[in-house]
Length: 247
Ligand code: CAA
Ligand code: NAP
Image (tube, rainbow, N blue to C red):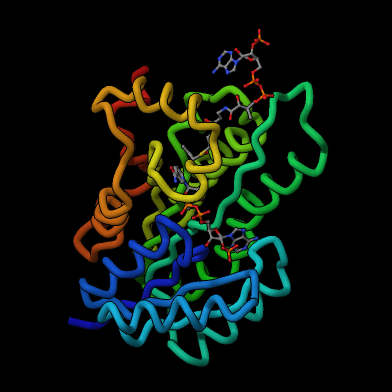
């Protein structure tokens, strides 16, 4: 079978690293992006190599910067050819009650979590259509449709992401390209560890399965949708949140 190439934006974060490892184990050529250039990407790469995940590729790209996304596309095309699978994983939070929210917190979150999806996907979707095959997975959140105290910016961006998923899915359905959303619940990465401990404990207790998620549980859901055999699933949202969306 042809080896598929997967690009994961924000793939050096808590969820992204495990997704890169999982896809590598499944035989994908894996590429990812990083923003803050302080040698971290070299440390990340060497850590992954030590763990047995050799040959993953890293590219600098701030997803809020359209020009940087164009350069990312040029570099991945030159190195790897067509990217078959794209996972829009790059994301940030800037939580605050709306009455206290600064314009910057609003713009930064919409810019990274939603505009970033346009900037990256816009580069990769045409070659997928041309190739007659493509898989796009957008990482949203349980807090998109559900809403969360302090997350007007994040919920708006993550809900927008799923609207984007459904509309793009319609446009490319006849071309062998699927577009889906995975909406994780709370997984104990840096993003969640930033929440005040007392609030975090309250959130954990409100989750029907009574625990936070494991990054591998999210990675498995994403891999399921990226699979060649998942061609009949498009425009859908896969909730992986321990039942929190029903609370
Ligand atoms: N519902 C109702 N009222 C709430 C509330 C809630 N969920 N949370 C707080 N309040 C109330 C408090 O009881 C308090 O009321 P009083 O003034 O009457 O005492 C008031 O709101 C102020 O609360 P805080 O002191 O907590 O407000 P703050 O401004 O200091 O903090 C906040 C606000 C930073 C948003 C904080 O509430 C918080 O961190 N909340 C959790 C947000 C969250 O879940 N973020 C997820 C990040 S991880 C992620 O996003 C990944 C993912 O996709 C799941
Ligand atoms: P994380 O550890 O903080 O990772 C976030 C990743 O996004 C990092 O690799 C970061 O890169 C990258 N990133 C941030 N700004 C970027 C930008 N402008 N351009 C390119 N990349 C950027 O968080 P995580 O928990 O793994 O979250 C990953 C995704 O899952 C996010 O979209 C998040 O909203 C979503 N999610 C997480 C949870 C959860 O519970 N953890 C739940 C639901 C959804 P740098 O480190 O280089 O800045």
